[in-house]
Length: 215
Image (cartoon, rainbow, N blue to C red):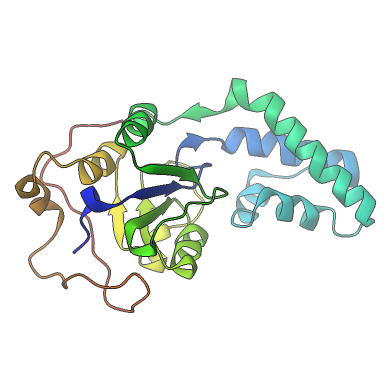
C-alpha cells in the first residue's frame, strides 16, 4: 500500500498536468510548420504528436530538412512558447497551493526534466498521458495518473499507473492526509500489500469517499 505522506519526492509532468497548454502548443507547432514546411497543422495533427519531448516533435515535423534547419526550428519553437505561454497557458485550479504546500513540507519537488536524488520507492511521477506513466515505470518510481485535464493526450490508465487522481484536491489529500486513519478510504480492502515500484504486482487505485471540488 502506498503511503502518500511518506513520499519524499514528487515529480510532475507539466503540460496537461500542471497547466493547460494545448492552445500554446497548437499555436507554436503551427508557426514552425508554416515557417519551415509551409504546411498548416490541424488540431488532430497536434494531438497525434503528443508524447515525445517538444524537441523531438519539432525535429520530426522538420525531418526532411537539414540538421541546421532542424536545430533552428527547435530554437524557434521554444522562443515562441516562452513568448506566447504567459497569455495562453492556464494553471489548473488548486495546483499553485499544492506546489507551495509540497515545497513547504520539505519534500523534493521537480518537473520531469529535473534531477532528484532520492530512493525510487520514495518518489512518485505524476503525468496525464500513457507516455508519462511508462517513463515513470522505466525510472522505477511510483506512478500517478493525472485525470483532471480536459486535454486529450491519451488515457494514462491504459498503462496501469500505481495511483489514479481525478482532481488536484484528491492528489493533495493523498499527499497530506489529516491522519493515517483519514488515509484509509483511498485504498480498497482487496488491494495487494506494499510492493517494490519495479515489481509487476497489481496497481493501487486511488479512491475517495467525497470530493471537495478542487477544481
